[in-house]
Image (cartoon, rainbow, N blue to C red; front, top):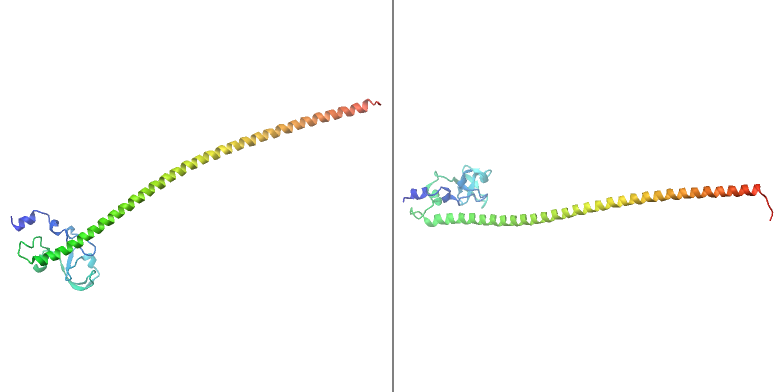
Length: 206
């Protein structure tokens, strides 16, 4: 099988998955923007290089802060630079040590970033689980408070009803006592009047 056939056996991203912007970690194979290889051997996308152009094709690297030339990554690259991205440097008699050192450096950077992101994801998942547990606890507390409030409202309603009943009974008793006092006063007055009449109409001596 020829080299061309071997390369056609896999999609292009199979060989360039490790090529990424060393600043924002945007992936080259997604073809979202242009990528550049800097003379300091860092790779950067045009978005991260924007505003850092010193002069034509000369940029300030955001990582090492060097003023360096840049070459757009693609088929039009000079051969000595394009070989750094060769998927099988051993088969063409290239400088395998140079190519592998370059690619391994960027792979390690990419994998370290992936591990960092995985760790962050695990931490976010832990925080989300903790927040979910706290929310469930707060919800249960709110439900308990709601039931307690309903119970207290019913108790307050019952107490108000009992108070009104007590007030009504007190009013009825007061009215009854007043009526009885009025009747007693009336009887007493009648008796006094009769006694007075008796004394005035029938005088006698003992």
